[in-house]
Image (cartoon, rainbow, N blue to C red):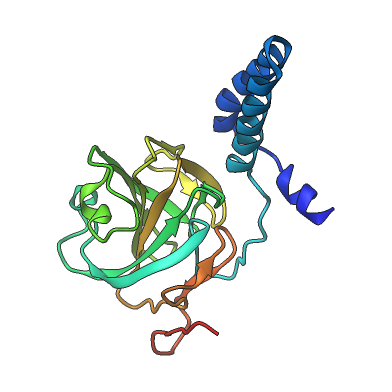
Length: 230
């Protein structure tokens, strides 16, 4: 029962343009020839699953940075933010989260703050799991000013199959941690660039939950974490 409840969650509004035509096609094709109807039915069910938009419980203490996406933490390494955000060339700690086709693809704001700059850059469509995807793939980047004046950046990156990045933010907009702000379809990657004083609280290989997993804490005073499969 729990699995069915998790499956039939609310659907992100961007998904209805796929779900409704497929549902209509399923009825028509089933009437014309049942095998085609079954194929279309499976595609409809898969779209409902892909565009699911589950509620999340977001930790709200000041200083917490929350994962912007569901997926596996693939890389934690120093890298300069996207140049189009005009945050300077100095490397920052970058956390890269890879989303596969079965992950929730709704993206969430990682912290309270104000959107200082939005920047879209057209690019290639390499597999989102490759290191070069952050630099060369199509992306939508956001520069966010935190309440204490520090700044972070988070980036939606298209992947091999993804051909559409949706970002609903506006420059100057005030946002809260955990708020939905867009999605990427189908299969993708999210990067987040930390402030210099922030230490990651996740490890490579760890699965993050968008809107829930704490990936950094301004109040933390500990070394970077490592992880191992057990």
